[in-house]
Length: 104
Image (cartoon, rainbow, N blue to C red; front, side):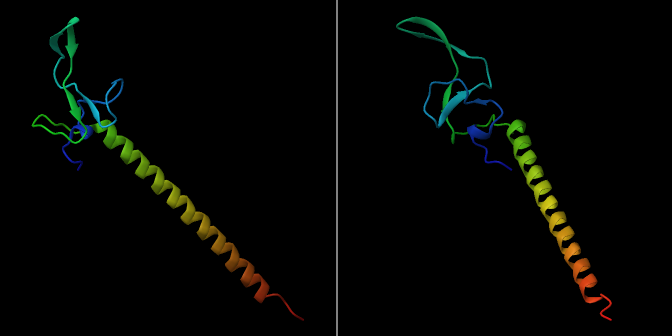
């Protein structure tokens, strides 16, 4: 299970922000209405990747991407296994033929 940090939460949005690399926005709730010198604007809370709260929920998109990478790696290992097995079988057959040639 992932650590319950903002970077692993389904509500964490790192895309499209003009923030530091280790920051993002929490999209758990609608943006807050803020006022500044230029007027009103909508604002999502800004968080660091390793922040946490009680609203954390697993990000299934991240989990599915990791599972897909593991699946692809296992297929690659399986293909390499079968390729090695076929090569070994060919060597055994060649060795058998070589040693059983009629030498008369």
